Image 1 (cartoon, helix red, strand yellow):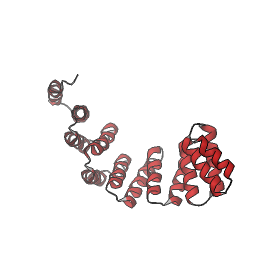
Image 2: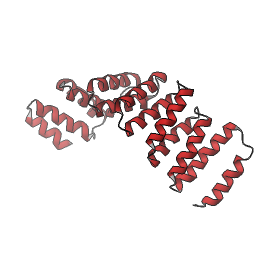
Image 3: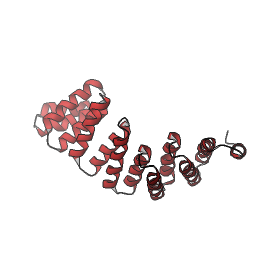
Image 4: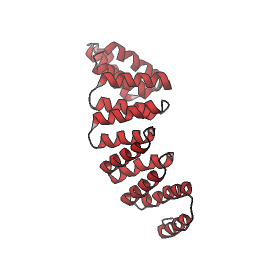
Length: 220
């Protein structure tokens, strides 16, 4: 309803006498007010306070990175998450957010290392695998990216987008026949995956199988 003044009054009333865990939840709620007001710096400050109070609150740890992106306070985010890791070195979300902070400050090698720590600490955290592999692709370390994508594929199962990423790494490593097999599997799962058809066209073109290449490009 855009009644932000009333919302703030409710938040301030709720803060009075709140326990530590309640206070963090209240700060998370307050961050939604700042977000709706497009006051992203205030949103970031509120979430920074929340995660310093309780860095194990999953929602708070998710929203601190959202606020860092919206406010573009990437360097502040890196410092904040390094402080959190100093106190809680096995916090997988802190390592994950740190990785993204490093990516946004163009420190890609550090980003890869931080994202690796994230999924080593929590082997069920699929996003960390995929984002780490994506970062490896950005710096053209296709071998390492392929290794991580394969690990994710065997751990989390069939996913046509993951198959396309695996194929793309194989293409970059000149393993065209292997890439082709992955793309055909991806297309079998999703017959409308334009990127899979495009890359399949690239594979056929590299083999100079022109009719098949044209057909794949046409479908893309």
